[in-house]
Image (cartoon, rainbow, N blue to C red; front, side, top):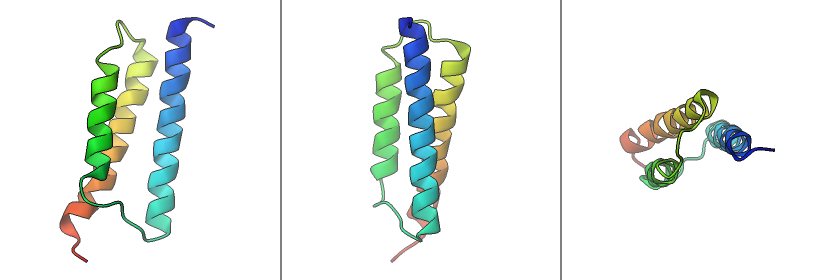
Length: 81
Protein backbone atom coordinates (compact mmCIF):
# COMPACT_ATOMS: atom_id res chain seq x y z
CA UNK A 1 0.00 0.00 0.00
CA UNK A 2 1.44 3.35 -0.96
CA UNK A 3 1.96 6.09 1.58
CA UNK A 4 -0.60 8.33 -0.10
CA UNK A 5 -3.27 5.63 -0.01
CA UNK A 6 -2.49 4.94 3.65
CA UNK A 7 -3.04 8.63 4.46
CA UNK A 8 -6.35 8.58 2.59
CA UNK A 9 -7.46 5.57 4.63
CA UNK A 10 -6.34 7.31 7.83
CA UNK A 11 -8.32 10.43 6.88
CA UNK A 12 -11.40 8.28 6.20
CA UNK A 13 -10.97 6.56 9.56
CA UNK A 14 -10.73 9.93 11.33
CA UNK A 15 -13.84 11.15 9.50
CA UNK A 16 -15.85 8.09 10.51
CA UNK A 17 -14.62 8.36 14.09
CA UNK A 18 -15.44 12.06 14.25
CA UNK A 19 -18.93 11.54 12.85
CA UNK A 20 -19.57 8.64 15.21
CA UNK A 21 -18.52 10.60 18.28
CA UNK A 22 -20.57 13.65 17.24
CA UNK A 23 -23.69 11.54 16.66
CA UNK A 24 -23.17 9.57 19.88
CA UNK A 25 -22.80 12.73 21.94
CA UNK A 26 -25.82 14.43 20.39
CA UNK A 27 -28.05 11.36 20.76
CA UNK A 28 -27.08 10.97 24.41
CA UNK A 29 -27.67 14.70 24.97
CA UNK A 30 -24.05 15.14 26.07
CA UNK A 31 -21.77 17.98 25.15
CA UNK A 32 -18.01 18.19 25.10
CA UNK A 33 -16.61 21.01 27.25
CA UNK A 34 -16.38 24.33 25.41
CA UNK A 35 -13.24 24.54 23.30
CA UNK A 36 -12.34 20.84 23.28
CA UNK A 37 -13.60 20.21 19.74
CA UNK A 38 -11.96 23.42 18.51
CA UNK A 39 -8.64 22.32 20.01
CA UNK A 40 -9.00 18.94 18.26
CA UNK A 41 -9.75 20.80 15.04
CA UNK A 42 -6.58 22.88 15.56
CA UNK A 43 -4.55 19.72 16.09
CA UNK A 44 -5.98 18.21 12.89
CA UNK A 45 -5.20 21.41 10.97
CA UNK A 46 -1.64 21.41 12.27
CA UNK A 47 -1.18 17.72 11.46
CA UNK A 48 -2.39 17.99 7.87
CA UNK A 49 -0.01 20.86 7.11
CA UNK A 50 2.80 18.31 7.18
CA UNK A 51 1.25 16.36 4.30
CA UNK A 52 2.88 17.10 0.97
CA UNK A 53 0.63 16.83 -2.09
CA UNK A 54 -2.36 14.98 -0.61
CA UNK A 55 -4.87 13.41 -2.96
CA UNK A 56 -8.16 15.20 -3.63
CA UNK A 57 -10.13 12.51 -1.80
CA UNK A 58 -7.91 12.85 1.26
CA UNK A 59 -8.35 16.64 1.21
CA UNK A 60 -12.12 16.16 1.07
CA UNK A 61 -12.07 13.81 4.08
CA UNK A 62 -10.04 16.27 6.15
CA UNK A 63 -12.30 19.20 5.21
CA UNK A 64 -15.44 17.26 6.09
CA UNK A 65 -13.90 16.17 9.41
CA UNK A 66 -13.06 19.76 10.31
CA UNK A 67 -16.56 20.86 9.32
CA UNK A 68 -18.10 18.17 11.53
CA UNK A 69 -15.96 19.31 14.46
CA UNK A 70 -16.91 22.93 13.90
CA UNK A 71 -20.64 22.20 13.59
CA UNK A 72 -20.50 20.03 16.72
CA UNK A 73 -18.80 22.85 18.65
CA UNK A 74 -21.30 25.58 17.73
CA UNK A 75 -24.07 24.45 20.15
CA UNK A 76 -21.51 24.29 22.98
CA UNK A 77 -20.77 28.00 22.68
CA UNK A 78 -24.43 29.05 22.87
CA UNK A 79 -25.84 26.66 25.46
CA UNK A 80 -25.23 27.51 29.09
CA UNK A 81 -25.53 24.94 31.80
